[in-house]
Length: 188
Image 1 (spheres, one colour):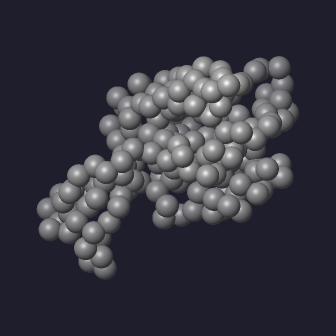
Image 2 (cartoon, one colour; image 1 turned 90 degrees about the vertical axis):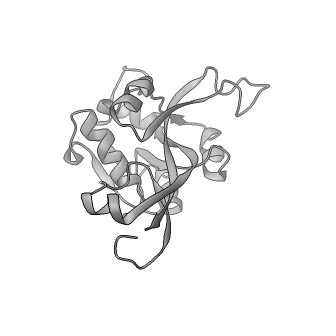
């Protein structure tokens, strides 16, 4: 959009900073949809890296972990950087990789990555598969309201109790998450 190579673009909230020139050159045609940020982690990694400490509920608890944050240009690495900054963390606090989603998931399931971060609709096949994979946990964002106030492009959302499997009541309780809004932007 900035370089004039396209006239319209789907832009994920938090994926790029607006500069002064953008305010005159780009227009938002509206917000289209909200997609949660999913941070899945391996239970065995949590036990190995945080022995006896229970489930992971804060980004600061991931220091030293191998975390895949998605490919460059996807918007997720920049979004995750903003979350790290809000928590007083640096990229160097983690061992980050930027594999595409499918290879990253294969590495994650094989134990070569401790956590996996991506933005996607709840009904996406990858999300549904990971929500049902034994030994894989979804990290909640109990401070979702605070994130949305500090980072205006985020919205607090909830993964409802039982949405994965009503009969087994999976998840067992509502899971607070943060979501990014995708907007349609156009050149003036």
